[in-house]
Image (tube, rainbow, N blue to C red):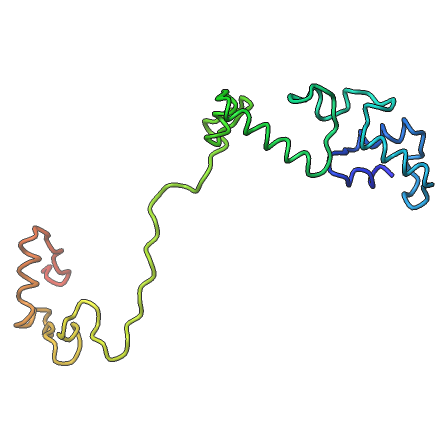
Length: 187
C-alpha cells in the first residue's frame, strides 16, 4: 500500500503512511484487495486532506499566497505552482527573484567554488583538416611541385642546399637561429 501510494507525485512515504494510519488500513495489504469504500476514502483524503482528521503540518502548501488556506498539491499542480511563484518573485524584483533571473543559487549556498555552469574555458580545438582532392595541387604549392618530389630542387649528398633552395638557407641564417655543430667534426 505505502509503495503504491508513493507513486503519486506529491505523496511521499510519510504522507502515505499517515493516510493509512488515519484510515486504519493495513500498510502491508496489497492495493488490489482494497474494498471500494476504502479506495473512496483514500481518494477523498488525497483530494482534501485538511477536511479529514489529518495533521496540517503534513501539507506541502501551507498558507497559500493567493487564497491563504492550507493545501496539498499533487501531480502537475506542483510544477505549475512553483513556476508561478518564481514568476511572481521575478516581477516583484525581490532578492530571490533576481537570483532566479540570473540563474544563481537562491537559498544562500556558496557560489565561489561550486555550482558553476557551462564548460571549462580554454583553448578551442582546431577544426578538421580537409582531405585533398585527386588531381588538385597540394596545399601551399601553387603549381610548384612539393619538396622531395621529382624535378624539385633538393639538397645534394653532403647536405648543402641545391641551387633553388639557397633562399631558404639565407632566411635561416638571418633569423638568428644557430644550428648545432655536426658531431663528426671533432678531431
